[in-house]
Length: 299
Image (cartoon, rainbow, N blue to C red):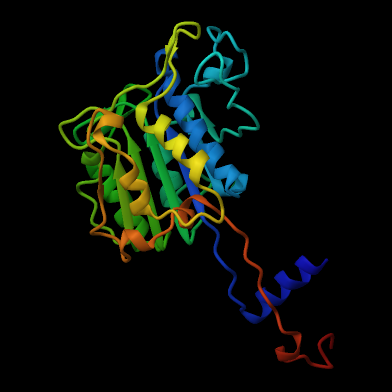
């Protein structure tokens, strides 16, 4: 009842509500050989949920449901290795299979969803937006469904339109693919941090290989990133974006990672990772004595 009263008061008297963070995680790859890309998406999804994200703030695009694949020796589960725990628990996939397309991704990002799309599959305007793409790519492109290509020109257009429509205040955009930074080179929209697992001209490499599962089960970037997040990132963490970037090195990744900070409005050593990866609900104080009540409110 208190929540309803507060919402009514805020609506009637124009009290500004704190905007919530939004996150979009996209695994673009299908087929059993890309088992690791689903794992990568699930790892970052689990981190976001652990740090307070609610399902209505988080869109998960997953091109292939490897947990239910007939070749999976652990039905309904995803693992980094046979002796490691199941990471596929309480996962809600918003778009799967052929619904993971360039068109539906762009529509979601730009708020141009097809009429009748439920609210749970929409991305609303957010205070901060976290975007994570995993898949195969090359210089200036990534592959959706191992077939269609989204290019750096599409990404440039998407962010510029989002900026014009004021769909965000700040964005963190992370790409894990070969030549990942090339996907962000053309972006001109403001207040965006871009991160790539490899620079132009270099590949990104896989990590764990499981003979029992019969697939590569992780990428080096996501494998080491998850170790960092599990060890050092919680809701009270002071880890900055610069700390995060400094954690990775070529010995770890077998390639050089890269980023852009020139579009952003704050130094990266002053931006906490929890600004984007965590969600801590804020309370709104309403002073009833300051509201202009009228004795004739029902007349």
